[in-house]
Length: 352
Image 1 (cartoon, helix red, strand yellow):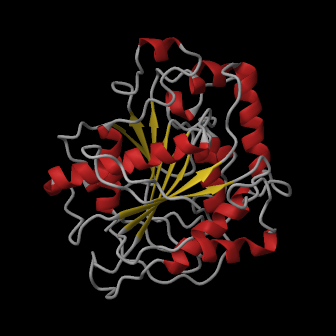
Image 2 (tube, rainbow, N blue to C red):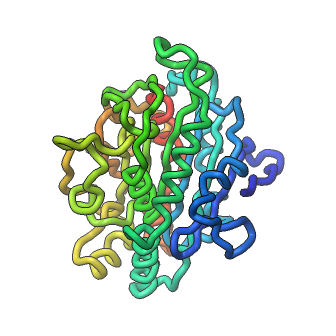
């Protein structure tokens, strides 16, 4: 586990970041080594190495995407949350849910995502990510579901269930980029059932007492998955007749941009169709909504985000510079903007 170092003067607020590292089979690694933690000791290991600060209000689990080095993943997560802190301090009235402040704490899930920037490289990492999550062989969903269950068990409960927002409540948010979004979806739907404590949230969807924990919001930037993935692959993520669905209490929000060549051109060549990050979500088993990415001066209303799936068209901003736009990945990683943190922060505010 690591923590980000103090930033220099004028660089913005400090953000506490912890990291867990996975190998190419999705196994949790002992820090600084290539040695996997024994499967039957994953829960024990997390309990010994992850201590949630009592004063934290929001817990973020961030999973990175293609072509991201470990330290870059930690910096990326910290930058998103750091900008959110800055926005909340400057324009608090736009985020009315934070009655007792906003003190985020971040866990970054890091995995081997590097390859050649080519069709072959994209296919290699896509196949690696699939193998890390494959039933019977991949360990990533097992490790991440343990992580989410651990975080839920140890985060503070609201002291008074009758109060909509409470100073003792800690909220759990998932944030992914590219293939990292696949890991998070797998982890949520693989969660083992056990009795859950009551949650007090702002979203309209009812909580299911049979679920092991509740994810309060889920935001995926430029997801590298087929457009119909939520119908064809993540089949148990949402409720259906006779099935409770995964413990996703808040909305699943996904950005897309037509300038994303990784999930456009490369995804089209690899899988015969463009991906979510390029064209948005296709068929789904639940209703979905579509909105445009807002500027930092335009608030997100609860009605904008209170849906099971929300498509966010970010093509006006996620374009990349001229060099990026002509690169094989295009604007696939061009989500580090204040407007992205504005969306992230708005989801946390409406979770109260």
